Image 1: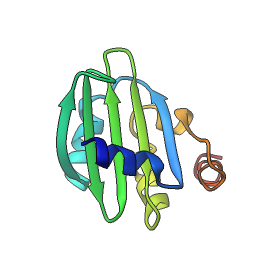
Image 2: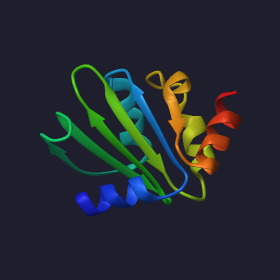
Image 3: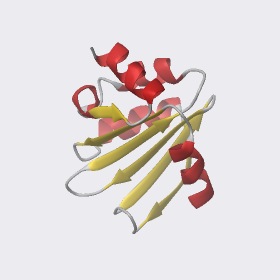
Length: 110
């Protein structure tokens, strides 16, 4: 799981969000449209969910007060993020530290 997490968090562009706690609707969408990988529990959040499909990786650090989203990939990332924007409060919470990610967030949420 740590190797997969590292790949997710080191792929550019990497989009992130400190969002509302993950809800059943968001998890249902992810489970319907992505392959769910093994979840882990404990650190750095109560529950860690992993989803992947067509080179897009989504990692959720889900806690009682917030859910940290990590979304990365090359091809297909824009389409994946566009489909995710209606869930949680991602439209307002999404950001990036890398230039390609900043451009993508600005283009999709602007």
